[in-house]
Length: 67
Image 1 (cartoon, rainbow, N blue to C red):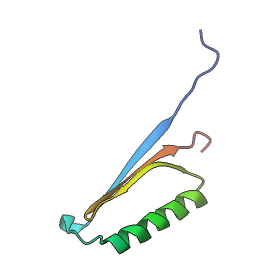
Image 2 (cartoon, rainbow, N blue to C red; image 1 turned 45 degrees about the horizontal axis):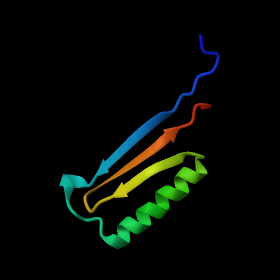
Image 3 (cartoon, rainbow, N blue to C red; image 1 turned 45 degrees about the vertical axis):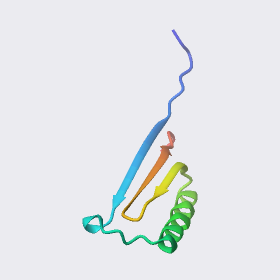
Image 4 (spheres, rainbow, N blue to C red; image 1 turned 90 degrees about the vertical axis):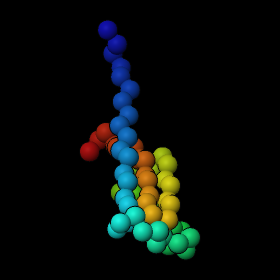
């Protein structure tokens, strides 16, 4: 029986605009990207991938196992 284990838990967050309106301009997407990067650093969370489109965004992050 193995004495060690390796566990990773990922969370996939998805947000969409109201009625999927295409309101996230390039400028807004850049601001959102910066905002999320800062907040995840403050929370000591690892962002694996982030994708922001004009009507929705995805963030894949690793859930810390010590919380």
